[in-house]
Picture 1 (spheres, one colour):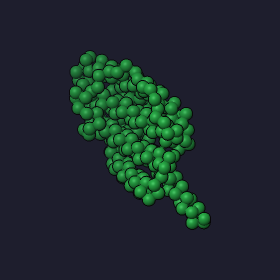
Picture 2 (cartoon, helix red, strand yellow):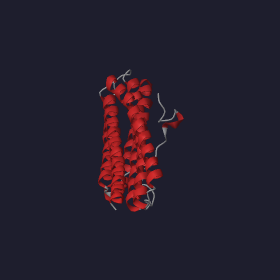
Picture 3 (cartoon, helix red, strand yellow):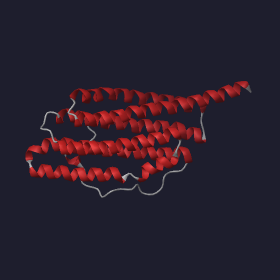
Length: 243
C-alpha cells in the first residue's frame, strides 16, 4: 500500500511539473511578444536582436516538454483526465513554440524597419494590436494554470477582436502605400508584422480549445467568431518566414 501511494504521488508530481513547465514556456512567449513589439515601436535594434536570440530557448523548452510527455505516457500509461492533461501539454508547447517564431519574425522585420523613415502613427497601431494579442495570450495561459474553462471559452469567443484590428490596420497600410510610394517598403514590413500578430491570436484561440478539451473531454463546437476577412499578404511571401 505504501509503495502504491508513493507511485501515485510521484505520478501526480510529474503531471504538475509538466504543467508548470508549460506555464514557464508561456511566460517566455509573452515576454517575446512584448519585447518584439517594443523593439519596433522604439526602433530598438539591440532589443530586437535579443528577441531573435531568445527564440532558441522556446524551441528547447518545446522539445523538452514533448520528451517528458512521451516518457510519461510510455511509463505511466495515463487515461481519461490525466491523458488529456499530458496531451494538452504537448499541444500547448507546440502553439507556444510557433508563437515564439512569430515574435522572432516581428523582431527581424523590426531590424529592417529601423533602417527606414519613422512612421509613428502606424507603429502605434502595431503597438495597440500587440497589446491586445498579448492580453489574450495571458488570459488563456491564466485559464490553463487555474483550470478555468470559462475564462478559456471567453478568449475563444472573442477571436474576432484581433481580426478586426488586423483588417483595420491592413486598410490603413494600403492607404499609405497608395498615397506615397516611398512608404511601400516600411508598410510591407508592418503588414507582415500585423499578420504575425493575427496568427499569434489564432494560437491563443487554439490554446483555449485545448484547455476546454483537457478539462471537459469535449471539443468546442461551432464556428470561431470571425471578422470580415481582408486579403492576406501571402502574394508577397509567407508571413511566418524569416526575412
